[in-house]
Image (cartoon, rainbow, N blue to C red; front, top):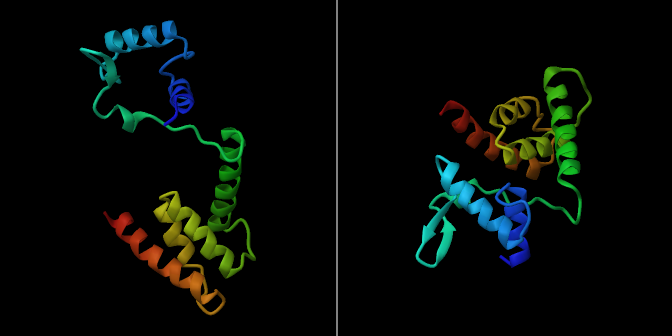
Length: 147
């Protein structure tokens, strides 16, 4: 990672308020002193991220400059549309669209929705490639739901 990316991740995760040395030092000391599971450890040469700390960090999400709130809005809108369909509030969705929605839900690990969508897809009406992918994804999703 470039220093600018590290700084952006540190700020977006609330590790520091700015990248000024005083802010970084204050954040590290506060973290070590106050946290039950500090993200930093003192070493002979300074500080480093504690074991497991990187798993708790979120990289900033960008899409060609789109704001994360815009991406969240689009995802929520699509998910709301899918769930409205599953509740029976909307009709007339074609089989190929349902196959694509199924893959979207699978990517988001929404396994119940994957299984529900697959039950509504007509194999005869769907593109064979999309239906084949959906069939493979629903097998995995059923295993996840049952475990």
